[in-house]
Amino acid sequence: MKTANFFKMIVLFLAIGITSCTSESTDDGGNGGGSGSGSLTIEVDKSRVYDNTLVNFIVTDASGANVTSQATISIDGTPITGSSALMSGVGVKDASAALATDVSNTIQIEVITPSFTTKALIEDYTGAWCGWCPRISQGIIDVHNSANGENVIAVAVHNGDSMAFPLESQMRSQFGVTGFPTGILNRAATWSSVSGNAMNINQPLQLLNTSQEVGLAINSSTSGGTITADVKVGFDLDQSGLELVVFLLENGVIAPQTNYTSNFGGGSTISNFEHNDILRASFTDVFGDAIPAADQVGGGEYSVSFSTTSSLTASNGDIVAFVVDASGEVVNVQKAAVGENKDFD
Image (tube, rainbow, N blue to C red; front, side, top):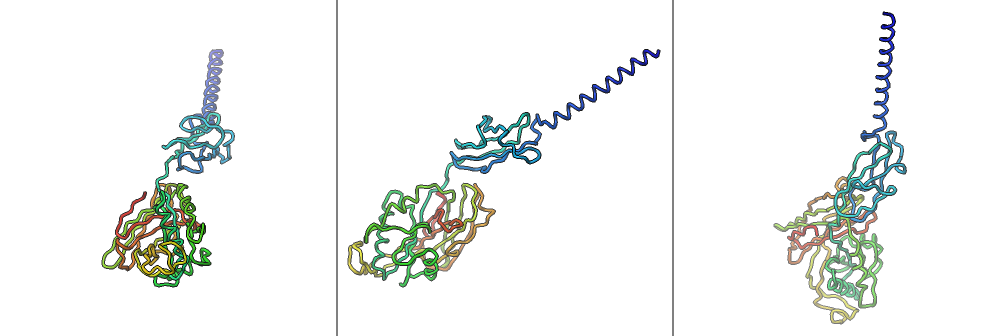
């Protein structure tokens, strides 16, 4: 009887021991993260990019330690070498990481192509009294007659004549204009001449060669002497520090123009000169109104509406809107006739 009880006790102790070992093993397996329990995290520096853009990944463990160099990162299930990858091919890419038996979360990178046509801005500091100013007037015509030249948009900022813009002196000071004529390209460079009669046509055209991440749309109307302009700014990729400038221009003003060049038939005075792109009013600060930071998100849009009193119509008025970056340089620009609905392009 005692022997039977002794064997029962031995069996009981063995059962307890086996149960204890099994429980301990299960706990270890949970900490190891064989099922991807979230102790490993992957992040990427850019989640929306243009095709053929390099992105960088960071992998951290449960304690927040950087384990990128030890982890294996995969894009759409294919391991990559290192922690950077060239995102090639439009679409959504899935990225994850693994370290030993632990698997991270999955993140997505959206790869897109540019949505917007790149356009450039010429601000022409001019005056009807200025004999060399027809050189830039002719240069603008030559640019517009060149391939893609319609994507270079001109604004004539007049000084000392009947078309003078009230804030011209502040603008001239801001952009270092010390003489007339002066052309400022994208508020970043001075337009060079090649002679007393001609400008360097290629200089503004070259600004069209870089894809821009921001585009603009303009929808304007006129009623009872009031012009309303609805402007949209679209963002391919995340931005920061951008500002919006919106101008009202007048075209077709016939007034005498002093002329020292051989352009427009020569002669010291062109009595019936047609002045176009005349800056008449600014819906915003001439140096830009801030675009809310929360709206500068890739794939998003910022919309704003302006109005002013003016007699200009579709036959002689234009709206020009452009975005400048934190340094004041033009990012992209759009132009539409008064009353025209100009969508993103």
